[in-house]
Length: 173
Length: 173
DNA sequence: ACCTGAACACCGTTCAAGT
DNA sequence: ACCTGAACACCGTTCAAGT
Image (cartoon, rainbow over all chains, first blue to last red; front, side, top):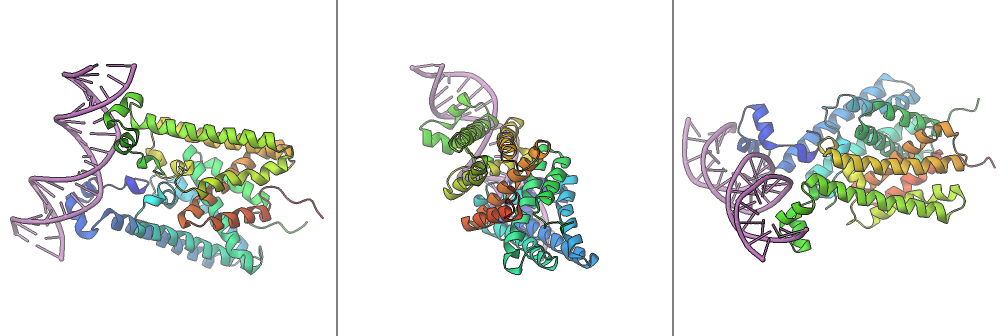
């Protein structure tokens, strides 16, 4: 049950103890169901990012911790992963689902952008571009590691990003 | 027709002027069909990378040109994009298809690894990790830009990667 | 307001039957 | 060797009918 086409009215109905036709009362179409799942996902993620901002006073700690969220949904495999929604046959996704997937990206980019400026990694005018680049890189790493079922690959890629300076360069020693 | 579940026996049969049941003579299951498509894709890609190695004597030119391939399949939207296969419900993909998707990643990582060493970007022992990180980052950028149908986002993310030093740092001026 | 069974068009797959 | 029609179980969706 990891992607949009993995969503299944009849299985879901069985889990919930109801007939599949009844689900259409709450979610008229599969698009509505998928959008609701995606929305719930990015809302949870937005809350987690806010919590991180509140927990760490140093924005560099936020940057350090950011990849952990993606790592977690990699660790518990049964968890749906929005990057999945994002990728395959994105064109075929209903517009309502696309909108929620983009909201997920927007939340991440906005949060990263703010943190990058606060940490002095990039000037404000470059922060959104860098934020989007980081989001794409981390999502890509999650994807690749997922396809190998090897979380150590994820860690190695994140390390490479850091070493290359994607999250900001170390102060000269 | 961008992803695995977009593949369709009946449509394909109509395009080819045959009945859908007949396709099972050549591809017994959808897994065989999907694997054949994915294999063809990464073989073409491998040939293109070889051509790039042959065309440019300077490995830094190879690094400069590498993102162009992903940009191209972003430009002509009708083209199938293996990153799509890779992502959504990857777990649900038949093993035969998974194997071809991984071969695509392997080809890219091996090529990048060689080029990175030749260009002196990283020491040999770090080259595979960096290569995989670059591949993931570029694939992720393609994915995000694709979801926005905005190729300028792709260019901006690649620029950010370069500015951050992911492809190697500029010699001190 | 909430649920159901039955039907519909779609899908991948199988198979006996054709040439 | 290659193709076909017909059937199967699955899917999302609709709808008249139940409480």
